[in-house]
Length: 209
Image (cartoon, rainbow, N blue to C red):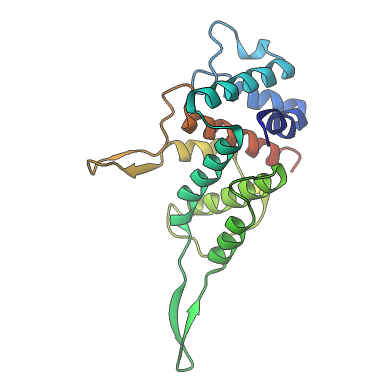
């Protein structure tokens, strides 16, 4: 997988309305600044070129190939979702101790085992994103509580709701203080690239659902 294939399999296959909506989100100071140019003046081809150039600069700045950026994307979604999925737990049943595995945990195991982190394909990345974002959405619906089950329905995915919540994700820093999991303030960082990739994948999944 390279940046050209990623763009073709996401943005290039969107309906016109979805492509415009995604363009208006990404061609913005938060993600891919245009300077004095207005986003609505940029057509689909120009939008794709801007994304291509952005990914190229992230590769150069980070020293990572696009495949490695895709791997970082996979790992980032896992880091956000995994703690929200209920763990297996022992239970006494008919005098015997058995291990109860929540449906969401089984779903999670199936999801992470379905993608090759080192060499992901577009089809596996799409499926992985859809499943991970469904689990994340279920957790948002449960106000952050651990999830035991979920509805496997891509129409439940709301890109803006999901990405707004992810932008507020916190982790504990070295000093013990909470900080944002993703640093979106610097232009050509892996964190910002992960957000752009997530938006692109979510729109590709939800368009025409």
